[in-house]
Image 1 (tube, rainbow, N blue to C red):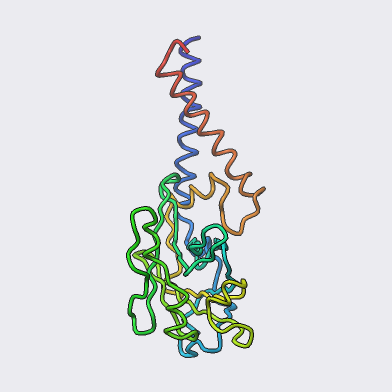
Image 2: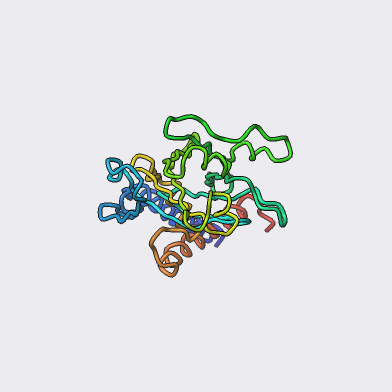
Length: 249
């Protein structure tokens, strides 16, 4: 009887390992273009002042209105970004800061602050900040935007990604960027080129998205139908291995 029970458990273990192995293999064979939304029929909106010769290089764009204490998180070209100001309490801020973030190995959270460059590729970040707020050295001041010119195309860059940006406001109602910002009326346009779009997926990325219900453009119910059997199989595998390694359980 004992050997029959052991054989039954062994068969179950073989089935579980085979199921997980085949799942990983099939997921790894999914081409990246099936995961990323196609951009062939993209719709991008660019300011009139933006160079028309560069419009076709823009894969994705967005715009929003910025003001004191606004923290805008968004996804552009497959990258996650956050943009915010340095406002403290009732005191408006002096500039704008942006960073990108991503997760590796499911739990490792990475964050990179981005530098601002003008059209001559000159770095225009504020002076280095103290140790309490190190990110302040990555701030673009509103005064700098006015000094360079509101129609300037800015490059926001870090080791991971590059983004284009432009600012705008109602010049009839406001004299400068600071006034527009203080009245929550500073317009920001952001665009990302095709060569910066994050389309790099591997088997581990896809498995992570499936298991944690994060598959893009897939209904959560469909994702759950795929993920739940995998979780059940993993749980059975863990349980079987533990009971074999610790007999008195």
